[in-house]
Length: 394
Image (tube, rainbow, N blue to C red; front, side):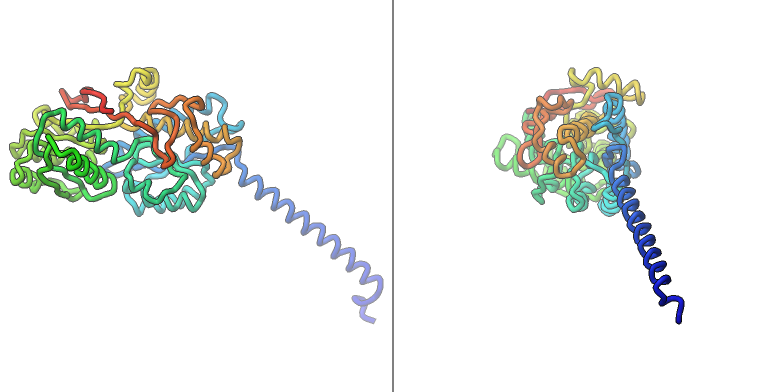
């Protein structure tokens, strides 16, 4: 008789099978417990996708500094849900393709909220990535209306919109008393939507400011001789450049060197202290910029600005208050939600009220389309290598 088929052998085999099954089930259970532990980290992660290389790196670096101050403040106060907050940083280089790759990497890092967004051209293509992953986005600096176009209820802007900014810019331009306006953009998301909104605002008002012309320039060019030709052609006494500060500095330099002494207005993308590194006092004359409030001009941000200076040795620049608020708002929403579940946190952000948290950058609430109601913009002028506050533009 084959010993493998005897009664005793069958009993032994049965016991071995039972033991093996127990071990296997135990292993599966252990794997399940380990998997559960891995998806319940001892930190709450926020994703910060900003430009840290390329021409727009100064914006990203300042945002990162503001994020870091906020993370420290939150953690010093006990963290969120008994956990520390951790920042997952990615460099999008203000480039759409790079931004998509980095956003996908970030979505795989178990982040609860995305708090990045330094330039619209890079932020727009990440909308779908974060939406697919269910991750809500609090965007501190980018504000193109292209960010609102998909109609996602998980996108929240802390920097107004390009439509509002353009309308406030036209208000300011009218007060400067100029008559013939040339609007220039670089064809990318933010500059293009600001330019279109400014043109629409001027045309709707019907005067006294007249639209003399429009043109597009190439982002990244080393000089812009065509702009002076266009100014002379349309006899513009006011130029509104809606692009970013690297191009703004080169364009202003070319115009002044070419003899143009008219007024130049910059959008918030161009209103940046890096201009002082490329323009001399003569070239900077009669240059204005519209932007969101800066901490050095905001009395309620005085203590925070001092903390920033003590930490990094320089003034908090544009969008730093929004960056600080993005992290604090995300942490506050997680605390109110009582969980890191994406949908619960998204709802908490959408339901935020001023009583929940006091933000530096504006009211702690959002309209149904994800924007803050009634954001404030300010008009600045360059004088003696510094920005001087002209007025608020509401």
